[in-house]
Image 1 (tube, helix red, strand yellow):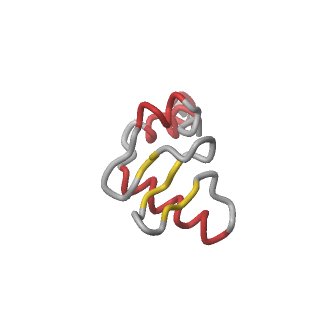
Image 2 (cartoon, helix red, strand yellow; image 1 turned 120 degrees about the vertical axis):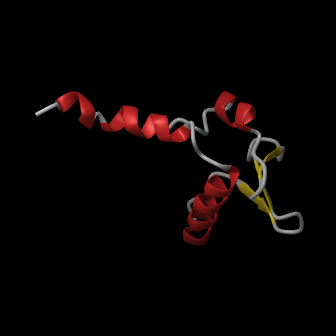
Image 3 (tube, rainbow, N blue to C red; image 1 turned 180 degrees about the vertical axis):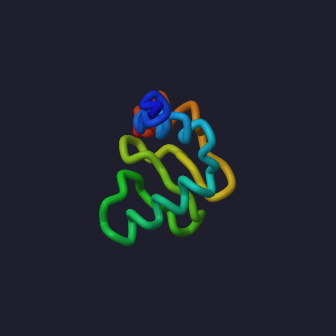
Length: 76
């Protein structure tokens, strides 16, 4: 049996390269409904903002991937 093919951490890391803004938005909306999101939701603009200073982080159509990665929000 090939155990090299069963490396969950690498598999999850590879998935983050393929996340779309819509996926991130859907996941965060789920967490917001449960009270566990790390982001601030701007209902008027329908965007998520960074809690540190309120900068734009992502919406359903676009994400600031570089800033999210820089701030450590993509470390799954």
